Length: 321
Image 1 (tube, rainbow, N blue to C red):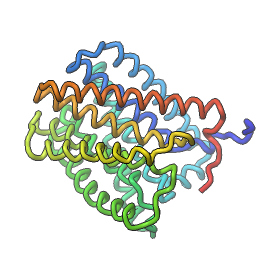
Image 2: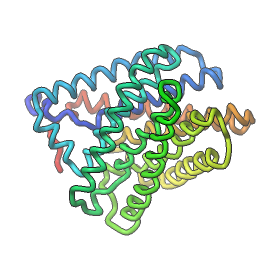
Image 3: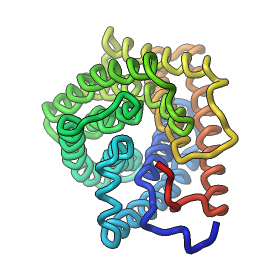
Image 4: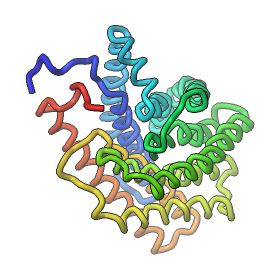
């Protein structure tokens, strides 16, 4: 691959999934520090890496918008890539959560950027779906991304705004999660298998119930009841199902979509640690550590493969449709 074939014009919107994954790991380490006594340096080091990655990806995409506006419009009108537009607002929300332990005021400031942006992207993408004709093959778990962002809002929202705001976003996220889950499952079961590079997005199924559990606990001030346990159970069963299908995942050919493995696993890890705070049993303690180690290992591996792809000049090149 020659250098002239690489261009900021082809800087993929999907790279914001890296911010999502690293943010998730940072939040995992923050929770693990409080509950599992993981050294604080893990949180600080990952927060520093997250900050650098966030500014690099955000500034690169803003620059792309300034010089290659048509390429941006093409991504935002793509039946699959358009869902990743909400990864921008989700990145702001997740960085906000990641900074809450270290700099609460900065955290809330980032929330005030991310929350309105998330509402905009939700309305924009829903109207895009309604006003355009799609085929079953276009639907995939990445469509959950705009919805998951709404469920994230209450995590900091309960501190930054009236409770109604958090309930509003939580309700939107849960409602459309159920609707989209039905649509995407129908497509997976009754139509052609998803493309190889979309297989990792199956892990996105874990995110809505896992994040929903965390948000519900924040809204209800730690209420572990039928609703919260049901959400956690759905997330845990989804993980078990995906783990059961381990032969389906190919680690030979790298795709940016591999980052779909990362944030959902981090969300389930955070939910498990929070549940451990309530039950405080040996089983929940071991399960928490299992997910911390698994999430750390997978994110490290995906990050390594991403860096390898960058050095081999496989990023920021024109993709085949």
